[in-house]
Amino acid sequence: MSATDRRAQLLDIARDIVAAEGFAAVTIERVARSAPVARALVYQQFVDLSGLMTALLERESEIALAGIGTIDPLGVDGNTDRSSTDDRVGTGTRQGAGDDLTDPTNAGNNPTSARRADDVDRVGQAILAYLHAAPTSWQIMLSPPDGGPPGLRERLDMGRAYARVIGAGHLSHYAGVTVDPDGPTQRLLLAAIEEIARLHLADRRTYPDELVLSYLRSLVDWATAVEAPHAST
Image (cartoon, rainbow, N blue to C red; front, side, top):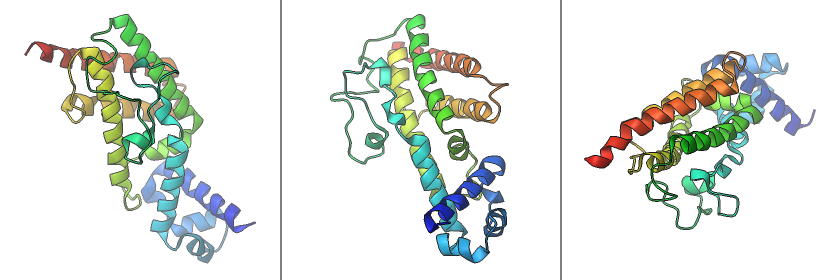
């Protein structure tokens, strides 16, 4: 087996352990035994456990997030520049010209409940498609960070900050007010969405797509109701 193939094999083994049992369950000895190879070969590839886990996180993050930024904010059509994940985390690619996702005047104020449900379903179906395209990678991304590599918490915090900005843009549109991405409503909404995503990935039969979408609609309705009264204060 080539060094490249061996590296991929070892990462696959570590990936499966993390997905099933969490980061803390991974050890060099366990990965080597599962391969099966000598521990020295694992050290040769990754230097130490931290190196193995960092390489795993980088690979799975790239797989999970590939293309996710193409989910339109606020129902922008295909003729308009689409935002990218890279823009929001500062790598310099484009966001749609002039877009202000937290401006409630963008794309119209206070859509009807039916329009809001349609928009939530559209975005929810796109999110489900990404979860289904890389379920194990997403299980890792949504796993508790205990035992994870250095920088994991910071990476997760960055991802959540990005998700809150996008979510606040949608919620501002629905509620007709500017919603704080770091406020309690958006934080609670994201935490609930993450939990239903974990449940769905763990057991799609018990938590099917339509149930996920139903929860998403209800959560957005709740968040909109919480924020909308602020317009009159």
